[in-house]
Image 1: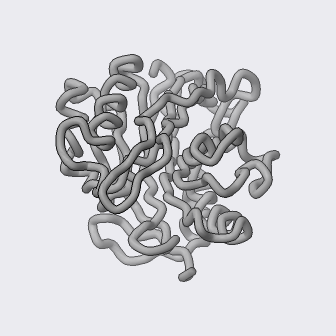
Image 2: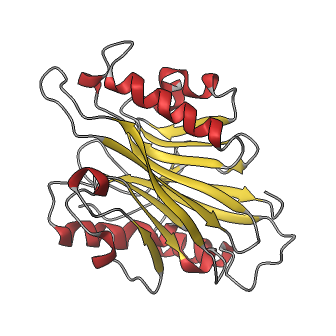
Length: 264
């Protein structure tokens, strides 16, 4: 693991972790202190963890990138129980731990970013696609982890974490990838203005894989670095994306900050 650093997608110089921490902490709205009329800056990080790594590595990685996050969207968490690895006095964890496939995608929400009561509600798993065979190896059922996040300023986001099928399962109409893309569009239809998705899309996010944004009438728009990134509500302003250091292979945690008005 390399030393964690922030890098903007526009090619700006690396910033030291401590510098990023100072700026991030100062700008985060806290429960009880955010005026209900104020926009709230919400930092969202999506990360594909190495499911083959020991739990201690997942814990150490989380400790490195989580200072830059108010909401963390994790994928390939199937081998860990996230609540056992993070400080639950700081983080609200939402992960279905009943099976490998249901553990795969998870959410962690910083307590100071949400209301003191009724903070994260209606956690549910939405099926992305059934598992099945693909060339060179099949996959397990893919679930989308979804929760309503009630922010400190009174706004509500619908946060979702997902892991799209790999390229070998994206062989045209009817493929497992195509089925899951259809279900992402359907999820947007159910939450037409509040849905913010983070994930490993296994296609270049800014290319709008399978026309997800276009088919959702542009309500959600893609923002990403390579195959990792977000679909965010069109109406929310976002800052330039940053990457937060190596995890493994071609994956890095990706951060995006959005400004959420109290009326959202």
